[in-house]
Every structure is written in C-alpha cells, then in structure tokens.
Amino acid sequence: MTESRIFMRLGLVVLLGILAGCSSVPGIVVDNPNAPQRSWAPDFLDPLLTGPSAQAEQAALEEVDGQPSPRIIPVTPELLREQALGRQALDQAVSGLMGGNQPAAYRIGPQDVLNVLVWDHPELSNPMGNFQDIQSMGRLVREDGTIFFPYAGVVQVAGKTVEEIRLDLERKLMPFIQSPQVDVRVVGFRSKKVYVTGEVDKPGIVPVTDVPMTIMDAINMAGGFDKERADQRTAYLTRNGERRALDILALYSGSQGNLLLQDGDVLYVPNNTQNKVFILGEVEKQQAVLMDQGRLTLADALAGAEGMNLSTADTRGIYVIRAVPSLTADGSPGPVQANIYQLDLHDAAALVLADGFQLQPRDLVYVSSSGLVRWNRVIQQILPTITTLFQTDRLFFNR
Image (cartoon, rainbow, N blue to C red):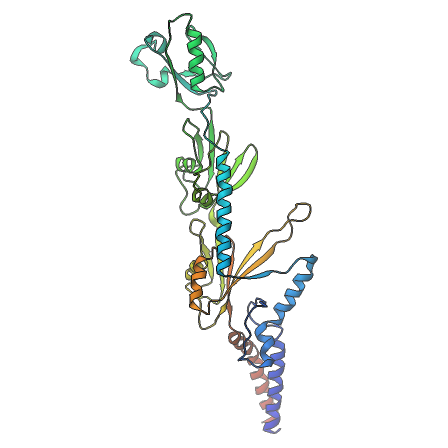
C-alpha cells in the first residue's frame, strides 16, 4: 500500500474521531448564548467549542413539563445593586417584625418566688428575723396562682405585674395597718422559660426574667455557638406551634436590634453542613468551601480553591449555579429550577465584581475550560485509537 493511501486512511480516522468528539466533549459545558465568538478557530471546530451536547440538553430542558430552561444572568454592577437592595428589604422586614415585639412587663406565674416587704412592719416581712436568706424569705406562687400573706389572706397573683400585686396588697392591708407601704419584687424566676437546642455549647432551658431576652441573649446563656459545628447565620424559632427560619445576620444588620423571645419559645441552631459552597471546574483545588458566618463572596470562594488554573480556564466563563425552588398553582413545591450567574474575568477589573457578589449556601461555582483545552481532551481520547489503527496498518500492509 502506498504512503499516500496510509495518510488518507489516517485522515479519515481523524475526521471520524472529530465527528465522534462533537457529541462527547469531555468536561462540563454551559450553553451560554451570550458567550463571545471565537474567531481564531476553524469553522469545523465550532461544534466542539460551543458544545452541541449542552445545546441538546438545553432544548430538552425547555420541553420537560413546559418548564423554562435555566437563565444565564451576567454579573454586572446593576446586579450587585439589586443584591444590596434585596438585603435592605430584608432588613426592613425584620425591623417591622421587631416593631411588633416590644418589651412587656413581666407577669407572675406559678413557681415564681416573690419577696413582699411592708415598711415598719418587719414581723410581716420577715417573721423569722435575719436568719433567713432572701430566697427563704420569699413566698412561692402556688400552682393555682396564689400566695398567702398575713392579714391579706390568699391573694391571686398569677398573670399580674409586681406593681399590680403591690397595689392589691396595700388595699387589703389598709383595714389593719395605717397607710401601709408595700414593696414587691421577684426573687426567683421559675414560671417562664425558653428552650435552646442544637449546636450550642450548653443546650437546655433558659429562664425568662423581667429583663427582655433576645435571641443572642438566649444563645449566650446557652454557652454560645459551637464554633466548629454551628451555622451562625440561620436559626429556627418555634412559637405557638409555628416554626420559622430566622436570618441572624439580617437581625443584627438592621437598626432595630434583635427579636425578643417569649415564654415557651424553642430556638434551634442547626449545624453548618448545609452552609457550604462547591467549587468545581478549572481551579487548582476542587472542594467544598465553608461559609464564614454565612457570608462568602465569589472572590473568597475562588481564593479558597487556590485560584483558577489560568493555563486551562476560560476566564470569560465563571459561573455560579443556584437552585431556585418553585411553587405550583396550588402552592405545593414544584420542580427546582436554576439561575446561572456568569462573570467575565478576562478583564482583571472584573475582580471587583467577584468581590461584591454574595454567594448563598449550596451554590455551585464552576470555572469552565477553554475551547482549546476541550479540543486537546478530545484528541487525548481518540489518540490511542489512531495509534492502534496505525500500528495495525503497518503490521498487515508494511511487513
């Protein structure tokens, strides 16, 4: 067989390999209609560089259940401003929640301990003399919400403030004491409590006192966050059988302070296993990056993966893929869709945008590979086949 025929055969094999590679380009391809055209590549390489398999998948996505395909949203200064406005709206919503949660006077309940002092009448205030401590001098509120006091008899105190109890006692003592002066205070807070559970150092019961208790107060009384395991951004509050998620960072970024807890509230601090961002693609170290107190920018994430591999990465294609839950017409959970945010880092000035783009838990950051790298990977796949055919041809026709 002549040498020209051998090269013709090899050329045919290469062409077949190229056509086969068009449907199986190695790696992940994001079909971006806004991506810039690559004028340096020959026309017959366009299918390899644009990813026809991704285009087919995109068309399939549009046809499944009539759901829209993922949106590709460029990361621009306008997008960062929208993010900032969204955070401000959340702060205002939290502030509105604070306004409906003003501190209220403490109301006595069963098992509380009261200390009642009648001035100039120590025999009523402390009949045992100075041998008792203030807790022993106190009067335990019974389960029916009453206490007994000399001359006043059985007094209903549950549900009342200390000021209301003081006035009630003065009125009942007037027939026996001229111008009685009474002072009432709580020396044992036992009737009201909140429960702090989850990733705190000392989960358990925290008593509610006459000092208003905020979320951070309760967490601090429970020993604070577990520094290694706690999700310091999100907490779950169960009140009156209703459970709701709270953005702790939003609570403290607003000027209205913190949410006040009430008797019977259950505060749960989850672990941080869901508080991660995944870095994939052409980076030096693909990994899951833990968000620091619920905050992480795109620049932080790329730096946590030891940066992009500039020899293989397509700096025009930095993508953040974010799952977006949806609801059906009847309000039930619908299929999860995706928003894809695309950042062009070909211009180094765009790193400012990367530093301002806030990621969310479970975001996936993907750095795409360049067209030349994908082409080389196709060649790496078909090169063993070409070599095998060449050696076979020599074996049978060039003995």
